Image (cartoon, rainbow, N blue to C red; front, side, top):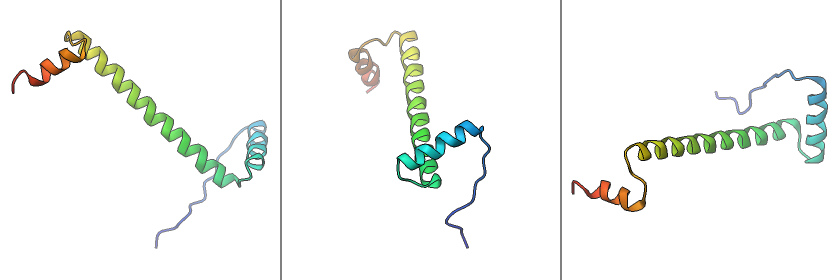
Length: 81
């Protein structure tokens, strides 16, 4: 049978623990809810960063191949059609 929740233990400095507690209270959430929300936000930020990294990589590759405008992209896409 799959569990719906798995306990997770982490160690943080006392000051961070106090700030986390205060934030949970200010947000009217328990620590688990706040952690899940923070983790989802972190995951989203990482996905966005990966996307931007890929965009930069693609832009570098395009510049190296002389593809600088939308017209260059269209010409490249339709050159063999």
